[in-house]
Image (cartoon, rainbow, N blue to C red):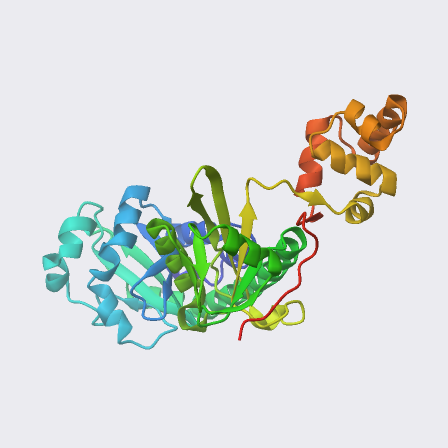
Length: 390
């Protein structure tokens, strides 16, 4: 006998739900606890576009990765429960058996059941569009085997008592995501001066001078019209997907993490293009223009130049120590540093020892990793102006 009647009374379940927005495994833990308490066979949460016909991301419990991938890639739009669900008011859970979503005979004749669900012994479901927010649809599904039977009315009532809490947790995740976007923008802009800002129509509205140089120096990798166009077909498809996920319906605060695209270049290492979704309202005071995404360009062949004033401030070093730390991170030996700075080798070694002590590292490799991880790099050609596109 399952414990669905007591779902709302479960402190453990509510704790797991409100923990979910803070950890990568949080929603998996919540679904797992829901499956346990409701006597379900499996569960999944899908982050989808506004029309709910394309899956951006998802979390699942008790379905192997191969079956889940097949569901997301193909069977999600063949599921006979979903058309019925689309015509029911959002914000609630419905029993596939009791609420007229799809009768069992039709379900058993469907391609979805015979080619996917039957092997997994999935016969019944409770599902709902739990949240719709600025072009994004989030649906949640719970499934049962034939032997477990369908979800009864008191069980869907218990699910619906939880629905407002689920929406609050999702809203909290959106807020947290916006703050992470803001922090990510600050960190990236502090480290990389080559960036392009895109508006909600995917048009470039701001291009830094360093980004213009990359575009001019790499005509075989990318070009810029009203939109950013990549010469490599696979790279363009990847960019289109990431931007579609970021901009669907003017998405703001959607849990889309962006990604990195490698742009092939003849006889050179790839030019890296990092897509970072932004929340324009949260970031407006920080950005030169309101934008929905930032594209950062990173040249793997270029050696970074370190802002030694920033290094000194971030690491608590003197200006001389920060300059030496930058040289060490650039691969210079103590002897070469002494020669370059026209001081004795003993002086340089003493300064390096002081740097190690202040930064709590014990080797050149550790210091190099630390310095390169800090937002204290700049383009070797200096700070760029930031022209606007009309």
